[in-house]
Image (tube, rainbow, N blue to C red; front, top):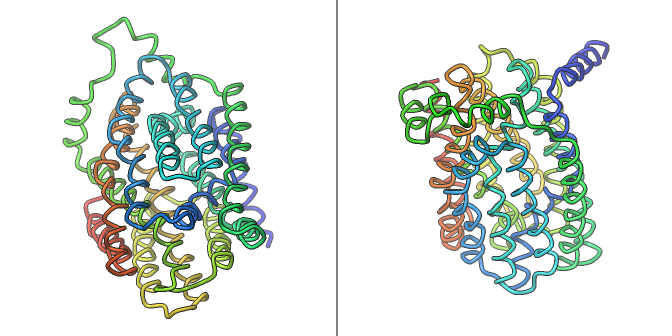
Length: 411
């Protein structure tokens, strides 16, 4: 126990070395607890209103379509007008999206809410830059770990959402979730507006605005630079493949768990599944990931991919009503999530800094854009696959993770 307490203390000490923006963004992310409930129950809410799985797939695809172009605009605007200003301008789209979801009764309401969500993809690359830009590279894995820990902690509280569904039904229970998310996001936006600061790199780029020879490379030059450095290119491809699995899992896992043709678990009961997987994930993120050595990163990523593959296999093989196997599948899948969204992200950002820190905004915007191009059809393909057989979206996930595992030999 003393050794565990010492590790926790050392991990907490690292927070003191973070930049101000990292502290502000991480702390405000912790306010948005109901957001995870939204992504878990949104597809079930849509199906409850009579929307079919294929239409759900098309609707969920809309933010990804906008993500194909808007991050490039965001990267350009951030270099030209400053990270903070551009981030806050588009981040407000989340508030509009939640307000529309709260009132949604028709398919076009849902489309509008998803389009407003899509506008926020302009900030995806900028958010990651503000998160890490004023923090030394050795502390960045800790930042991503705490962010991921927060997402997983939200899973511990998913039974609150399940209780809302149990007490008020799918329709009204989800509306309470939308209202709670709208409230927390508004508070978070106000705090960010008050305390976020332009990063030092952002100030430097703004000071170079009139010096054409000193300005950052354009997107074409940045793309050529990415292709030239094989390690950076492989990490970019791994990020894209990892992002492709996200809409498939968030959209079709809840449907599979509650579908009478699949596991047929009650909608209120399935809320314990993300809660059960959160505990081992939090232990790993607090005690292991912040202290992960550079020479162990590759092995940790491979373990995460293998766990993700096993997760989908167990889910497909699980018999009807097998709650324990569904929980085991979710626990294993959390290792995939940690690998892709904590370890891989930190490795990618640190690699960019080694090659050209001035290109960070554009490269992160390109990563977001490439992910969108690759994954925009995933929800629709998943919808058609799910209609053919509920197991097929998870077979596609297995193929994506297997491809990622094979690419690890190039890192």
